[in-house]
Amino acid sequence: MKKTLRALFIIAVLVLGGCANQEDKAYDQEMEKGQAALVSKDYDAAAGAFKKALTHKEKDHQATLLLAQTNNFIHAKRSINQPEQTKRLLNLVINQEKGSAVLKKDAVALKKQVVTMREGSVTKASAASSSTSSSEASSEESSSSAVNHSDETSASAAPSSSSSKASHSSSSTLDVQAQQKEAELAVIQAAGYSANEVYIDTRDDGAYYSMELRENHKNDSAADPDTAPSIGFFRYYKNSGKIMQLDVLSNKYKEVKD
Image (cartoon, rainbow, N blue to C red; front, side, top):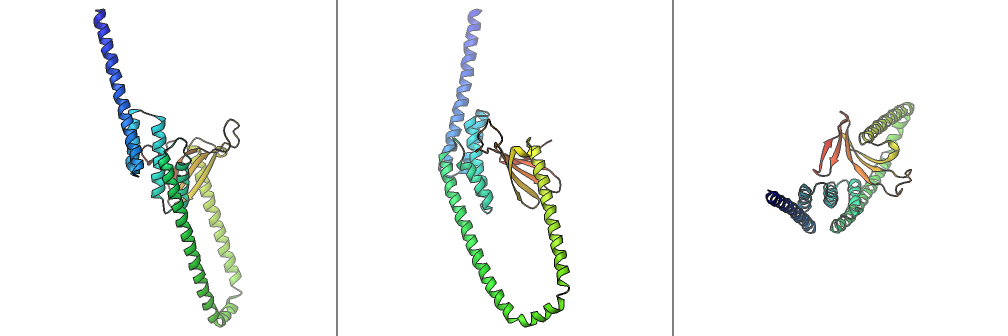
């Protein structure tokens, strides 16, 4: 009887050990696939491989880190027409501790491209503005006599009209600022922080505000005050007040429940 139990125990150990070895092997294979995909610049495939690796080793630090870094790079490429957001995401990729050196190199190259594109846009806009100004100046000179007569006639009405427009514009600006502030506080609370514990970067995307929250360690003596780890990316929908957070694993925004 004892021999039988001992034999069963040995078999169980061997089976469990074999399963563990298979999981380790599958994990290693997916991690290798992910790294190879990064080298070949197939970033979606890399993210998929790192995600599969996590199914073999749940909550594995390296796989989680590489998946987050890869997803940030993918988001950066997709938001190439929004330079500020792209640069923020690329900075996360570049500054990722123990991240992929290949991704960091690609992020640096893409960041230079974004900066160059933006400088080119600014130059074109400046040239267009200069051309428009010259044209307007010429037009104004040719029609100055007619305009002078019109200006004299409407001079008394102009101040009150201008004052009314300025007042309306000021009121609208204050309303927008108040709405944004309210949205930021709601997101901060939903993330489980207080206002003095975070930095927040907000962009108005029309139907919703896009926000990035980072930890503020300025008043925390136990942490490095010069670091600001990312808390996450959020969206606050203006009409409904719904708050969504970017899920790193699925690379999709999911609603934050109270």
